Image (cartoon, rainbow, N blue to C red; front, side):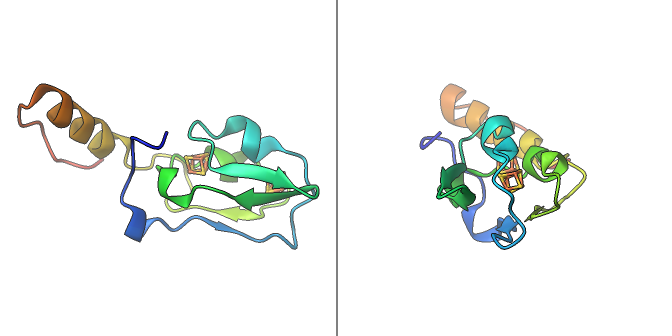
Length: 97
Ligand code: SF4
Ligand code: SF4
């Protein structure tokens, strides 16, 4: 997902590696491959790919991941409208959910 970036400077994704038990759930559920596993611990490998969907946080059994909004709505609407505008050249709504 190197071509589709969210608002990199505003991403609030955080990982407490001390809490991580290495289950791998975050790697499995993240649609943008933000995480990798190294030495049985999750690592944030591509912070800029995070779109704050919340899936990793919701599926971490030890609450090692924080992402805002933590309820999982993210701002996918804004991202999708940005993609459509880039692809079609037509102005799309810039409204965020
Ligand atoms: S919030 Fe979504 S996109 Fe961001 S790291 Fe977690 S699962 Fe991946
Ligand atoms: S879901 Fe949580 S415990 Fe599992 S690998 Fe990811 S950060 Fe570690």
